[in-house]
Every structure is written in C-alpha cells, then in structure tokens.
Length: 467
Image (tube, rainbow, N blue to C red; front, side):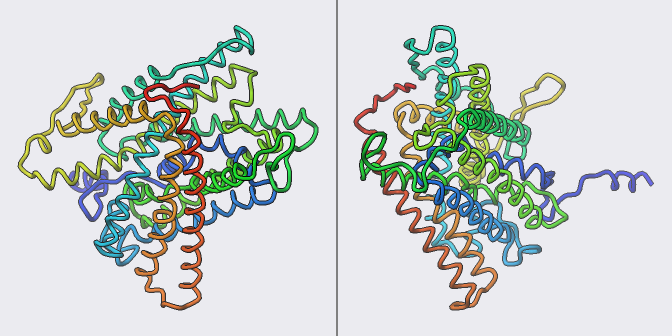
C-alpha cells in the first residue's frame, strides 16, 4: 500500500528520464516573451512608412506566416514521427535529424548570431529605457525646454550586472517566473502606448496618415532614396517582430506530456502569436492614426505627459528586457555547455557541482564552468554594447539574415522531408513559393538595414550611449 501511494504521488518521468513540468500556459508565456519585444513600440513608425493599405496587410500577413511555420516546426520536435519519434532538444538537433549534418552549420550560425545580436540590442535598449525615465522626470520638473540629455554607460553596466546574477539560473525551465513577469511587463508598456495613442487620436478628432505612407519631397516629405530605405526597413521590422522560431524547439522541450508535445506547442503558438498580433495591429494602426506620417521611431517618445505613466511604461520595458535577455541567452548557454561537457568528460571544471545555501533552506547548485563562462558571456555582451551604441541597426541586418533560414526555410524543408511531401505536388509548390517569398523579403530588408547602418556610421561615439 505504501509503495502504491508513493507511486501515485511521484511525478511522471518522460521517456528520456527527464522530468518536465511545462504546460500550454508556461509555453505561451515563454512564446509571448520571446515574440513581443520593445520593437513593438516602433510599429507605428513602420506602418507610417507603408501606409494604410500595406501596413496592416504586412502586420497580419507576417503573423500568419509565423504561425504557419511554427505549426510545421512543432512537428519536428520528434523525428521521424512527430508523436513517438526521438526527441530533438534544440533547433539544431531538429535540423540534424531531419536534414542531416551539412545543414547544421548554416542553422547554427544563423540561430546563435541572431540570439546573441538580440541580447546586445536588449542591453542597449534597456539602458535607453532607463535614460528615458530620467529625461522624462527632468523635463517635467525643469520644463520641456531644459537640457535633459543623458549618458547611459552606467545604466548599461548596471543592467549587465543584473544579468550576471540571473544567468546562473540552471535552464530555461527555471526562468519560467521571470518569463511570466516579462510577459506581464510587455502587456503593460504595450497597453500604455496603446492608451496614450488612443487618447491622442481621440483629441485629434480625425485619423491622420495616408494610403501610401510617408511622402516624397515637399513640406514634411523625405527624399526618394530615404523613402525607399525606410520602406524596406519597415518591412523588415514587421517581419522580424514576429520571429521566435529559433526558440520554439527549446520552449517545446520544457513541455510535459500527455498530450503530445506538438499538440501543446501548436496551441501555445496560436495563443502567443494571436495575443501578439492583437497588440501589434492595434498599436501600429492607432499610433499611426494619432501621429500620421510623423510617427516617432519609439512611440513613447512622442508623449511628454503624463510623465508618471510614461515612466511606468519605460520601467516596464526595462523589466521585460531583463526577462527576455534570459529567454534568449539560456539556449546559448545550453549549447556551448553541452559541447564542453562532452569534449571534457573528466574535467571537474565542467562537471563538479557546488552548492550555495540560500535563505529559506534552499540551495543554488552550479559548476565553475557555469559561473565563469556565463559571467564572461554577459561581460563580453555588455562591452560590445558599449562599443557599438548603434548596434540596433546591425541587429536589423542580423534579423534580415536570420528571418528566411530560421523562420521559413528550415521549418518548411524539415516538414517536407519528414512528412514526405511529393516533389512537384501542389503542397510542395506552395511551400517552395513561401520559401522564395521569404528570401526576397530578407534580401530587401537587408538592403534597407545596410543603408541605415551607413547613415549611422558618421554619428557613432564608442563607449558612449546617449539618448
């Protein structure tokens, strides 16, 4: 009887000996945290570059493509059978199982470059958010004409120190609470931006904007080349704002079964992308209606009052980025730590665990490898962020390079291989057309990002982040 009772309460261990506790709701919060970034605040500007027709079409179209390819990718967590096959613990494992080793190198370069690039961008954006809070308070108390310029090196370093501590958490499953908080924060600043835009739209008593977006020449217009680069960059911004495929397999690996992991992950993707799309379309269109073609690059910078609400939104941005940093960094940690442990199986540096007792009787376990290398990773990322304060523009280029292979090409190609879709069939032709279209979007967005980088190069001061 006692044995039976123990068996009844003992947690179920999965077929690979691991205990997974993730549900559709924890996977959804991870997905929302990964998808919704501070880039949502730039969507009104992006819609302004495309106009009332192409802007909303791009927002909805990219959402559908992201969900469609996420469904395909969810079936590749196990192979060759999506329900009973062998588990693939990472995106690269799935590529290796479905396509073979020769595609793994391209996948690894694209995936971890964009993950690390996003982390650098998050570090810079977090420092900018803190500077925005300080500037907002300065303008409120000293007047809107006061000199409230800020220098963000200190804030950038402080953000890095926080991430050093959080990086010692064991895995993506252990940052679920941080991910939930980050998802709540993303709702917070999105709602604030949406509320302020709606209030401004209501006071205008009309919707601004034009059918084709920003004008060429004349009062308030831009030059034809600038219009072209901005349009392409806006297209890229919208496409990459939905990207989270590079984290989908890692998130799916936290989910318990039954039901099968692919069923749970498809629901989580539907919920996560659905919520994200509602925010993106609402904020992008209402923000454009409020500001028209003069929509600022960061919608929050278009408001001065109420200063406390704008401060709340910027603080929420910073807290969200604290969590999103870990959601993006943990797969990077897992990748190189797994490789090092297999390369040096006898080394105590990589395998011996130490325990640090915490208040409440708990203990944090770590290896020297985790303590030293994760700290070095965060420190290096912080230094690069200080050296390249214009890195957000380069991040756009990294996103352009990664969107096609990670979001479309690999999921589609893996699905075709695993599902044995006949070559030349209607389904095969439709999937290949999606491949070509995504490649074209990536190339065009890359052109726009390169042009933006060239323009920014003449205004860069290394180790100096200013607002």
